[in-house]
Image (cartoon, rainbow, N blue to C red; front, side, top):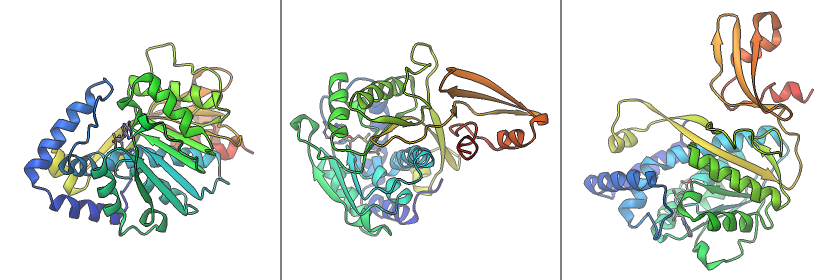
Length: 330
Ligand SMILES: C[S@@+](CC[C@H](N)C(=O)[O-])C[C@H]1O[C@@H](n2cnc3c(N)ncnc32)[C@H](O)[C@@H]1O
């Protein structure tokens, strides 16, 4: 995946305004803080250098994760044309950029966050966006602790936010975000803890009357909930030269692992199954690990003798539906 070029250029300009040494110090501090599983007692992004560092080293990956998750949802809900977006804990606006690229119908967007510097930078980055919804987004300061009603939107995103809150506050936030929302998307890091938070958010969304559309092919208990495995996906984002400078490393890309749940007030045909691992492709045989509606997680073997199915399995990727939605909808 490639970050929108206007965003890459805006990030370059933003970073040029902050001494490199300060950015590097902030990147190191943020990396170690985001590894700490404890909820945040105070805002983690604490300065202009922090929010600029966050935007440069993390926003491309969170953008890619939100983009991938929303794309999966759109495959199951091809008629979804949101006009309004609410990005809760939106920081510098990763989900706003991702959603506006996937849903050109978006006309109005609001980003809520507690950190003024993040909102300021987000607004600045958005100034030259191609999308009118990104350019005209409203950036509003709020703390979730104020218990303000969010007011709903066609699409509400909560990306990479829950780990900063206590369990009770996570449930409260997701429930409030669901009020008046048509679709709610919650995205977290693809770790066992991230998946656990997603499962709790999924319960809250179902309780609020929404139907899970992606990634799960059903509304029942997650078959991975009780074991040691966890549901997560991966997306590859090309690294910009700025990113390589800040984070080091030789690779030209980064693989972001994420867990997610997207639920809707309108029921959409669920996927028949979801591929939970990189398919194992050997000569004449593809092995898929598939989460299914009726049968939990199942290994599916597709051999060359299965003709069209085999060709589809050769093309299948981790995170895809199985069988492909086109075919299961036939
Ligand atoms: C890791 S950042 C994620 C930003 C963005 N959603 C993304 O995906 O890149 C978490 C954001 O949640 C915001 N946040 C955390 N706790 C909050 C609270 N209690 N009230 C408002 N915003 C909060 C933080 O200020 C931060 O911008």
